[in-house]
Length: 94
Image 1: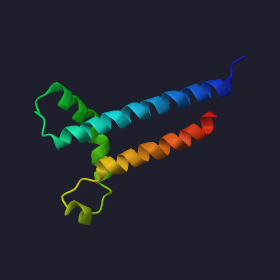
Image 2 (image 1 turned 90 degrees about the vertical axis):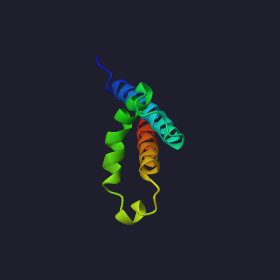
Image 3 (image 1 turned 180 degrees about the vertical axis):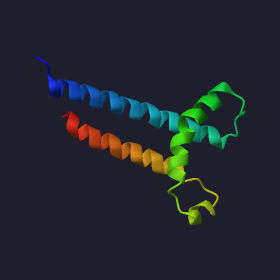
Image 4 (image 1 turned 135 degrees about the horizontal axis):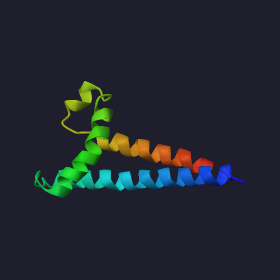
């Protein structure tokens, strides 16, 4: 017989692991933005390719007044959303 609860916990665990991985990819992207890396580096292109779609989506919802400050709050907002989603998923994993 197929155990649905075990399968659901495994799927939640995989999604949570992917969220954890994306959190660290996003963190690496933020740190790289502080040091002005070579834009032709494969690592930089990979990190930008993995994070730009999500960051651009978040940027669409940020008010224009925040853009005038010169600070990009989209990585912070995305990290907070990842943490909230991870905590939400972990409630079902117990």
